[in-house]
Image (spheres, rainbow, N blue to C red):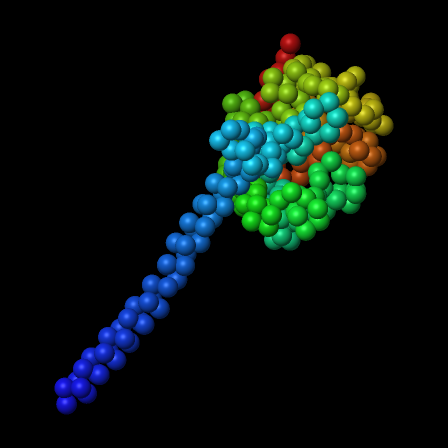
Length: 268
């Protein structure tokens, strides 16, 4: 009788333990996932940065994309590394969840189709220096930046010069035009754009320059919106101008208007 009673208690205890484990399994897995993500992000930051005595093994992505990942000119090559804090990356991830991982693994050919892309393949599976774990860590880092940029793009941005100055930084404009808006390399200064449009120092001559000037004289805000949104389609018959497009999925209308307000403040 005692053995039967003990058996019943053991079975009830076992059932209780299994039930408790099942109930707490999902929170436990979520907590483990969050810890794993934190470790991946930390490792991603280490790999992204420059080599130091304390951090001798890195991919040194900062060499091209900048310490903060916001892109800019790559030495004197004439090439501009893209801003990785970009809502456009988040948009691409919606249609291809492996987009960032594929770009890191196989290089810029994934984006441009050019086998001579300045962005090399990094994965050991195609002769690169990074292991799968290292690629995953950098992927997690870039995806976190893209998610932050996408969230910020959904927030209402006041139409003020101060907010526009922040958009100028967040959108990576300083990568071509400089942190002080004075221009660099082939990219023009914006320091007097509140008085006149940039016409002489464009990196690529445009076919509809007269229309650009006329649009500026009629409504500077409208002209700048057309130029920033799609300079190629609006002022160069669809040919590249050196100015990348910023569709609304990349730069919200609020952010664009604040940016234009900031730019029109630039008067010498």
